[in-house]
Length: 92
Image 1: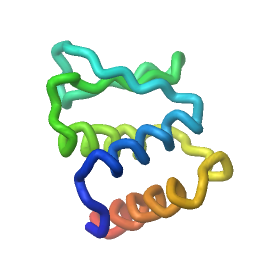
Image 2 (image 1 turned 180 degrees about the horizontal axis):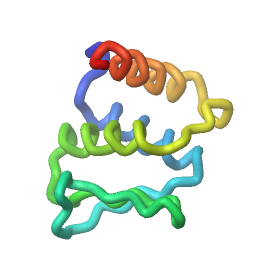
Image 3 (image 1 turned 60 degrees about the vertical axis):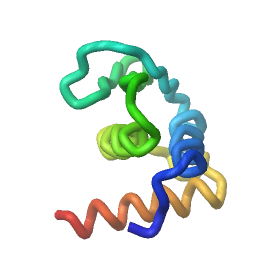
């Protein structure tokens, strides 16, 4: 994978959600996979006890399940989103 698991990547992922009118909340709870999606409210809830790498992985999983309007993203966000899409295609 060409991106790093760091705070900058986490911030960029969070901004992709924000630009698409999703709210990310970090909460404690009993999540099977560490997150849940409330589609009607456009809210993604991620386990607040996760470290940055686990948060990034959870957000990537969520991103693959929701609709993203790429036209709302800036250049840096588009690059990250395309990297994630490419990775998904390689895994399939």
